[in-house]
Amino acid sequence: MARSVTDVRSPQALIFGTVFLDLVGFGIVIPVLPLYAERFGASPFVVGCLLGIYSAMQCLFAPLLGRLSDRIGRRPVLLVSVIGTSAGFLLMGLANSLWLLFLARVIDGVTGGNISTAQAYIADITPPEERSRGMGLIGAAFGLGFIFGPAIGGLLSHVSLGAPFIFAACLAAANALAIYWFLPESLPAHRRSRTQERVPLSALVEPARQRPLRIILLAYFFTTVAFSLLTATYGLFAERRFGYTAAQIGYVFAGQGLLGAIIQGGLMGWLVKELREKKLAVTGALTLAVSLFLLPRSTTTAFLLLVTTGMAIGHSLVLAPLSGLASKSVNEASQGQVLGMMQSAASVARIVGPVFGGWLLNYDLLHTAPVFGWTAYAFGGAVALLAAGLVLAL
Image (cartoon, rainbow, N blue to C red; front, side):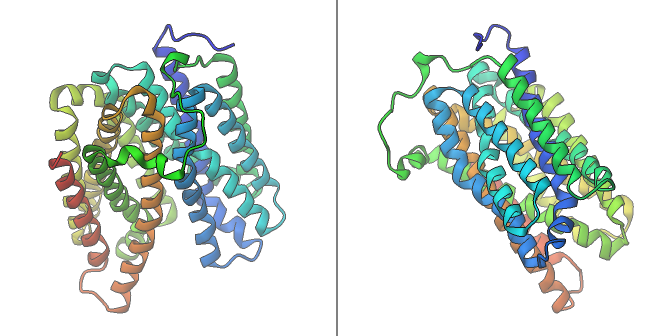
């Protein structure tokens, strides 16, 4: 069933499709899950826990899935994880109680750690000089998934609140079939990790003892904190400052996703060749920082959209180069493990960023700050600056 990798383009397209469908499913959840949970009596705090538990499970299991893929190959891990994602969405769509929703989110979070395995697959089939371009394809799939996912979720919610999740389960099932029939294994037996015995959990983070990788992980974490703080609070800021509706805010996020897909999927190869990974990552982090500092100063729609474009560009320029640098910092047998650590760092950041962003935005409201949003976005900008400084230290 598993073919050898003879044509790089076809496997890359399949991996792109795998990540894209994963992110469409994730995006479907965003506009629907809070309303769905409220139907079962969930308070806003419980809804927050329901959203956060997904990232928490990803944080715990992404390195485990990555390490497992280093031992047994990428294809079986991708296949089983996508099947698990389908099961989680199906359970969510059929749930009749709050605890079943939590169980479904746990299942989805555990199996959603397969992004690191998809990145490791790309690392297997691309030479080091093209690694960041390959990681850019993963970023493009993220961007496109965030364009289509929320839109599909909003449309299908008119059928029923459970319909979007059933649809997401069907997408994941189709994804599993494509992997089973068409995706070849990328990691030959002779290149797999030889470790078969049980290992302590501390072994999962062993590569982070290397200073360059530790710096990359921290930079990735801080960048994701800054951007997730933005995405969690942007709607509140735009609604309070400019009176934007949910639909208008959705259009802005769709534009961000499209811009990210163009940069990471279409331009990343050329940008890496011209500027190299380190310079790109520093430029992106600085652009994100400056844009965050300017955001609360927005007084016109044109300026708001200009700053928002800067944030999308900055974020897009950071992620793929840092993933490429991380991949090139370790040997072939540790690709899945290290890229799993990157996803764990991002998962923790996606918990920390929204919590701090919401708390600081609330601080501005309670203390009647002269510029609404300044405290939250100044913090985000400072964190992005810290990320830029870390990359400069490489």
